[in-house]
Length: 393
Image (tube, rainbow, N blue to C red; front, side):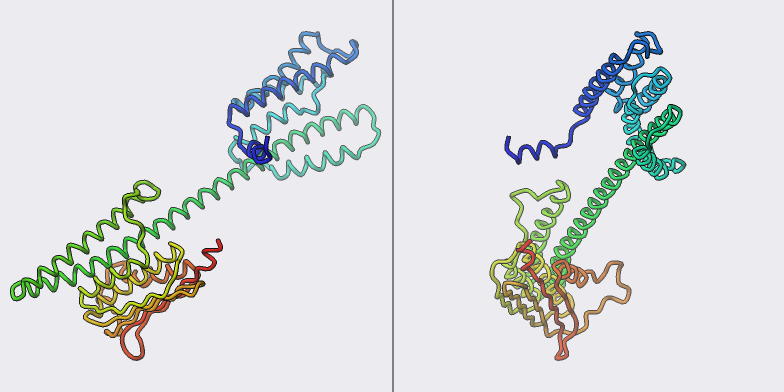
């Protein structure tokens, strides 16, 4: 068997049926071992009739096969017969069987504050260490030490079981926390995508609807052009929203027939739609191949910046610069419209998420983002997205 196959076999977690089979094998071997020790004694050492001895030995070892099914009942039975084996001078290996059963109890029992697990563990450790150092002793001291060692073995099994239970609980909590964090991040990503799609398209639709309403009687051809723009923008928004909602429904990638995530190649379409809303855009692209996530973030930043120009500055002139040097993408969107980006007197809750979303996209890659009026007039949006570490990861 190859080393990789062996490591995979050892790392694979056994299922419940396999674990029970292992317990059954251990129970049989342990019982046979005790029977061997019992049979090796001198006949005069027997304190119970032969059948009773074998019954105690079998009751001490064989129930361990089902310790995972009925842990408390198995522990009670094994502990009781282990105690019986002491005055009967039967081998019990310092209550090893009871400790093995108690470990299963510690794994499944809920935590109770009144059980001093830490103190039990400390007592077990000190007792086992002291027992290893004790020298010659009489039969009374030996019997007392045997009792203490049995208690220490039981305490050690309990402490170990509780420690494993706590570790598993912490691992489960950590997995749950990571899953919740992943869900929250995905919800935030979807919210950003929906905001970008809806805000851009609805702004364009609102502008063109106003134009159509204003010129419907005097210039019907221009009104029809505006309606065609509204139709095109609404179809595009619906297509992107279906893609995002497909991800939400399936919990995974959208269907293959859906359009791929937009990238820098889609900036030309944004420029055309902005021109239809009265914003003349000068686009400069000086980029090579980019990681898909960086390209999508750059597209969304430019899209949101153009949306703000359409909403707050149209008609206006705008310049979009996107350049990359192999290490980072620099984005600059400037316009000559009013420098202020004001909200309505009583903005609705959540208004102004566009600038926040752009900043989040930049920070996600360890970049920076600035937005504000320019001294010479107009407004500027600048972002920097490092991506050399993205490729390296």
